[in-house]
Image 1 (cartoon, rainbow, N blue to C red):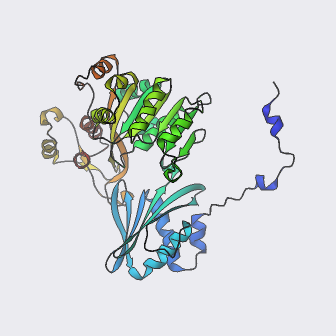
Image 2 (image 1 turned 180 degrees about the vertical axis):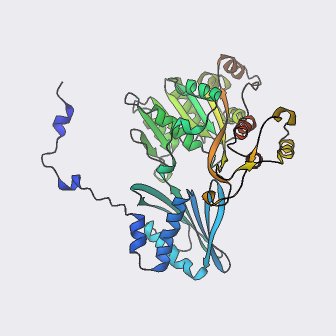
Image 3 (image 1 turned 90 degrees about the horizontal axis):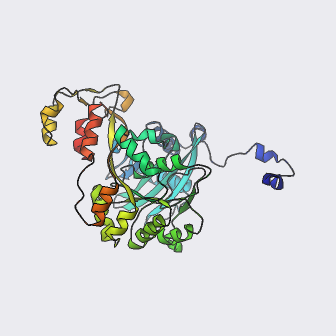
Length: 410
């Protein structure tokens, strides 16, 4: 067979193609070249945030000073206080980077920019909000280098791994990941999509916003101002011959109905939902108007998750007060007699926080025939799965997290 590529060969080899100059500037070069000291400070704030794996930078005006905080492992940590006279200049520089209106100081503004660091491109999302003390700036850092999006990074137990792979390897049905904002739902979905991303599979997503781009997947951004909401885009995507659909979030009845219809017609659908636990997802879908019988036909798995901070391996120490903490968690001490629990220490490698990174804990319901029948008959679903607390305690027994962290999150 004659190759299709033969019809699309370039007649002239462009030297620009061979020596593409990225329009994205290098942050270390910008820092080195910047002559204005306060602007140089902004690039230093960005560089330090990247080095410490911060997810967000908060630059906030207080009465007389500007406070700078990094969100590291889900917790805000103050890193500097500077004179308030620098705020206007910092705000203007960040607005210029984000292609925002530098004159507008009365209305909120959202923007984004990209910079290179150590050869990789990092996206920054900017939100500027006027407050009574001046503009508050929050910069979200989206660094793909920190997220490999592999299923191995989910720290699944052997039992959960078996259930997980069984569900995501189905050809149709709905798989829902739920949890509060910042619980790692998107990362879990991206890990699944990356695993399913093969030549013979057509994967399409509808997201608001697109957080990370994955090569080989058709990702569509919601644009409500143009009438492109979840439901509108989903209807169009169903005409694009998809095998797998990922819906950023099921927010309303129309989106839920399209998801159910898609799964009934042979598509595998992934989505997120806001509820307190796995069983709460079912009530949420019923409240959106989806019949129990239809849910019993399409639901494959519900995953509820939280993120707990991972103990720093360099300074963690044995927890001598574990008995009191077990009591606070309503857990029987006799079940943990020969277990050694650890708590956080403090060292330079973890910025004296005692933790480096975060790991997910899961509560997974797999809908086998027995559970599907219970759901169809509107019977109470019996708990035949490990709860979030039980899974978190398994992580604590392995020395991965602390009882203090479990108490904080659960």
